[in-house]
Image (tube, rainbow, N blue to C red; front, side, top):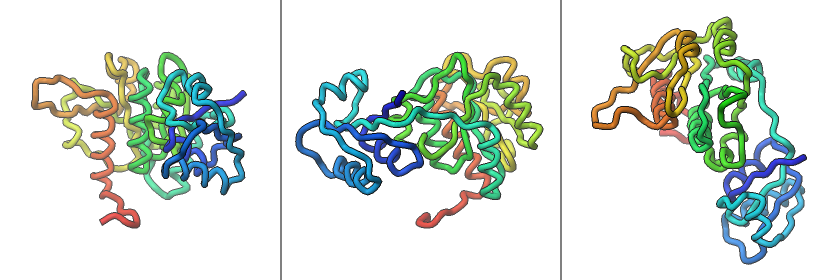
Length: 251
């Protein structure tokens, strides 16, 4: 049993991560600089490279934009909630966790994972049922970020929120009908940011398990933002309130 990752950048990030890569499949023909980076990294890791007909890659990716390269990897394993909490503890940081309540669009899931990894969040929680899981499209949409942030899949989101509360984590939900604007709320300390489904938002039970509901103010004619955009805006506000922790190379 194997999984597949396609696209030059997602494959490169998989090679750079701890993900076990069995081999790299590359379309026959000339290669450019970006593909050369993938092949150089595979060579450095001692991972075999096979030249194959482009049609074979088309079949593997179901017609996706594979950019001439596919990685054959070990099956993906999900993290546990405790793994995410330990990651925050090991870093000596207040936990920042993104909890996704039935996000069904793999593009949205990939985008949120990408933002979460970019700001240094400690993990993502998704439900096991009626929601998007980690697919090759998520790998590509996240630009490989999924290889560097743990994703836990739980059977019950409300139970997961209760577990997080017992660990002293403040559960904050994004809700268009909330009274409190997100930029007027105190978003410091250990936080689990809850982002709802693309169409229905946060479910009633999940909403009831949140400690605070916040909304993004809207000025134009559009009544709401895409789930991935809304979640990303809120994540950056949390990061801003935490003091924009500066990393080497930032100005």
